[in-house]
Image (cartoon, rainbow, N blue to C red; front, top):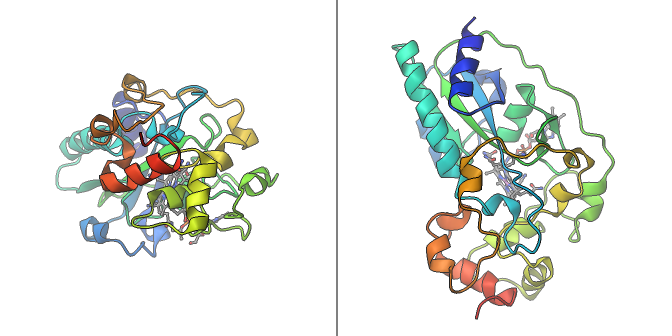
Length: 269
Ligand code: B12
């Protein structure tokens, strides 16, 4: 079976969790520049999860996802190697990988592929690795017989919504203007209220609150991806910023944004 052969290739490249979804089920696409990379005649999307829980990591001033080296590069490298193997196995077909900067609604797609539940915090929750997973995918012209098999919904306990101090999850959608993660990523000047959110959150990048309280994350397995353990940096300071900025998930943002957050959290030197 085609799907079995593809799963074996992903597994051999370190991806233990994958699923399939017909491309048309994922329309409409998000309005982002990378739309142009979607191959004409796309038929299937192969979703892959990259678990990133690497331990409790106390006393950090970066959110969990920014502690290992940049997941875009790690997951991207793994998916690129999968694409090369698939191109060899299925000559004439196209395989294009994406991680994050994707026109595909990745949480929804991974959910349709049977990789987990949709959390009330807008995150995909995998039964083994919880919501501490990144999502990547390969869009291909290859037709892989698959039927969406969503797993259902999360427990609906509401802990994530209640834990969010700004009410960003109150309307059952992520209200980006209120989300502390989004505020740390915002360019330019912050309003006094936004500055207070960065100070109170104490994280220079991202936010973990709505993930950390999720009961589905209590018994989550640690990441099975060795690259995520290679260089774990829990604290960013004015001194190590030049080094870390080059290889962490926040490398896409200008240095001044990170410096602003360092100042607000009292690490600015
Ligand atoms: C923009 C963005 C953000 C923004 C806005 C978040 C948002 N949800 O709107 C900000 C900066 C706030 C953000 C923060 C974070 N993000 Co973000 N983000 C994205 C990005 C690039 C696009 C999301 C988007 O705009 N979607 C568009 C909306 C319309 O789609 P949607 O939210 O999925 O909702 C649709 C469907 O899901 C569907 N739907 C919703 N619920 C249900 C339920 C059912 C039953 C059904 C059938 C359908 C359905 O209807 C909605 C409308 O069409 C994605 C990557 C991507 N390409 O998807 C990463 C992504 C969602 N983020 C991710 C992560 C890790 C985070 C953070 C945890 C990082 C951190 N520690 O700070 C936080 C979490 C905050 C939070 N609770 O969302 C991961 C999520 C992994 C996971 N386990 O799900 C992603 C997938 C990136 C990746 N490649 O791994 N993010």
